[in-house]
Length: 133
Image 1 (cartoon, rainbow, N blue to C red):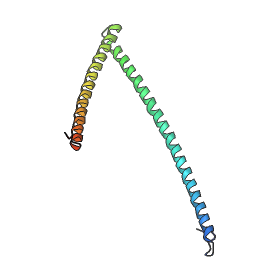
Image 2 (tube, helix red, strand yellow; image 1 turned 180 degrees about the vertical axis):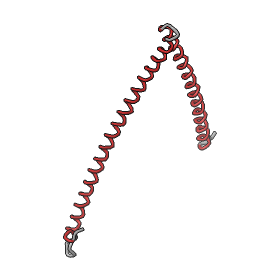
Image 3 (cartoon, helix red, strand yellow; image 1 turned 45 degrees about the vertical axis):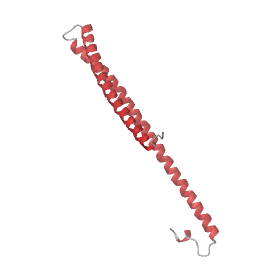
Image 4 (cartoon, rainbow, N blue to C red; image 1 turned 135 degrees about the horizontal axis):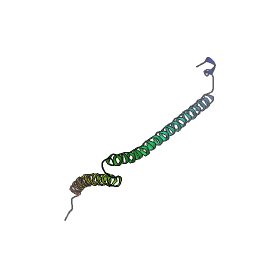
């Protein structure tokens, strides 16, 4: 700090307090602006990242379609086109069925585990508040 910024020893405490409050208010304003700018930049970066993830997901979905078309074209080397498409469709439906079955079993197992845990919690709560007959 420069010497002229320092308060002289004879300065009234009211003036000193007023200057201190003004400096604190200015510091709060500077801090508020810095936080606002940081949050604005963070939101902009988040929006850009979300856009890139969305575009990547859209490209992934399209890539799956291209992969299916390629499978049909490869199968069409040995089979007529319509039969190749039906074979690929059948394989995809079978794969979907297997995946759905696996998911259903997993969810049922999770549901059973959750139900057992809830029942255990209820038993524990009942021990805390025994019924009086």
